[in-house]
Amino acid sequence: MILIPGATGLTGTALVHEFRKHHERVHILTRDAKHATMFEDDPNIEIAVGDMLKPETLDDAFKSVDKAVLLSTADPVAMAETQIAFINAAKKAGVRHIVKLSCLNPDKKSPARFLRMHAEIEKHLEDSGLTWTHIRPAHFMQMYLLDAPTVIAQDAFFNPLGDAFIAPIDVYDLVKVFYVVLTTGGHEGKMYELSGPDSMTMNDIAELFSKALGRTIHYVNVTLEQERQQLVSFGMPEQLADAVNELYSERCKGSESKVLLETQKLFGIRPTPFAEFVAQHVEIFQGIQTAHS
Image (cartoon, rainbow, N blue to C red; front, side):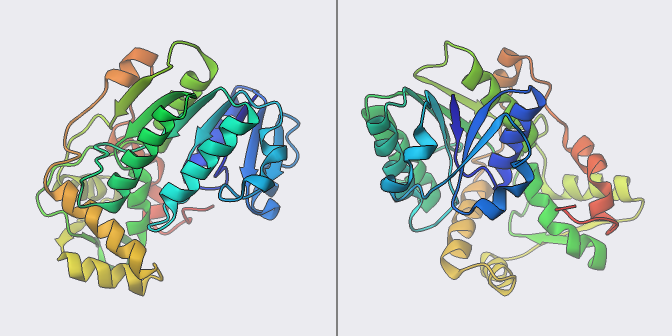
């Protein structure tokens, strides 16, 4: 049995749908059962309610579980504490193998707190005595869906990446990798990096938006402070806005510019081009439907 925590977030939901596609049984963990109502009628999905930071709430979640996914909310303060607590609870419950969703370039000395925390969590998992696998993706194409409102209203999208190259991955390609690692053997003690197939600047992305939408979409480079103000105005907590800006700073240095497709080749997964991603979601960028419809 496999446990997926964070099963109602972007990656967790995509991963649960991947298991559903294959008619595989899976446990999911959520802090609030009402967020998992979309899975209630599936006999292959067992829903447990609990908090990764509170081991005493996880007994039902870990019941009969052999492998677990390690992912949680991108909390700029408590992510490391949360995931380390989950590792410790999983070990106590007899879980054998944990597959961690990490990131490219985790580094305990990084200026970016999320990269520091992922490095800390990876090390704790490696030292735990559990069998482990690290999956390190580039940032997700789905993040550009958040730009739909300004693409619709202003024919533009805004971020502080300048002329940096970036190779984002479709989250649905990522979960195919997770599925293979969780359902086949031979991945113990391994680390898999992966990106999308295109290394692009923001102007390249603007051109792809323009072609898909039939009108000119502009990329507007903003400062890190302007980006921070925009994120906070959208309702993002200040600490999270700061953490996001730290990642932007690293990406401006080229930290996610390389195309990394060896993992997809190994597992026979066709990487989704960014142009194809835009075409699949063109109605969102046209304002015909929302990202959640």
